[in-house]
Image (cartoon, rainbow, N blue to C red):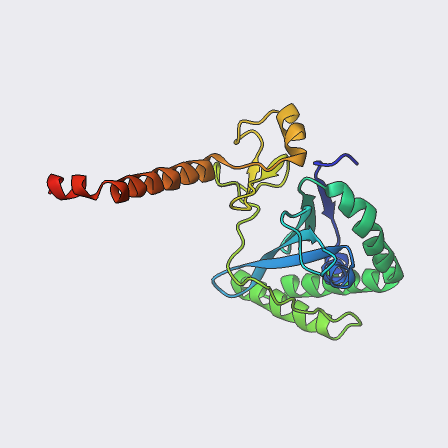
Length: 242
């Protein structure tokens, strides 16, 4: 896989839940990478999405400056999307380990998926009230999964703010594919929205990209500093103007 490509993985419910638990464990134990986790939380408090920015781990165990790749976990669709400048590192160093862990639990995951399907089928066919039915599905599925062999760990975020790393700030749509990260604000922007051709994106793989908004902010700050310095150098002008 070439660097800069995007990888989309669609999993069954049980495989997804186990995969995201294993992914965090793999990164925690890694001597090469550091994972920074953020959650998107609904008003009800439910975590709907998780974003893991993966940096290289330095010799002193601190994280590098820029993320190598980002793993976006969409809990409602059981989908993993890996993007960033070095998706190839995920494929070569992380994906095989994750697949090995999933293969060890193959039969168990199939059994859990069957239990989930059976539970939802029974609940949706017996309850007359659709809204009540939906609440019952959410509650009972969670309780049934708690009784099975796999226990789900709540991954505490190192940063509690709602994550916006995969929302394009220009079109305000989820930026899954063909994106580039701004090195200033760490937001992912569609290549097309940023006005970048594929050749320009390839050329930027080894360079920092700064989005238009951050560029404007930097210019504004530079102008403000310049004006302040000018006033400090000529205080008598300010006094006469008053």
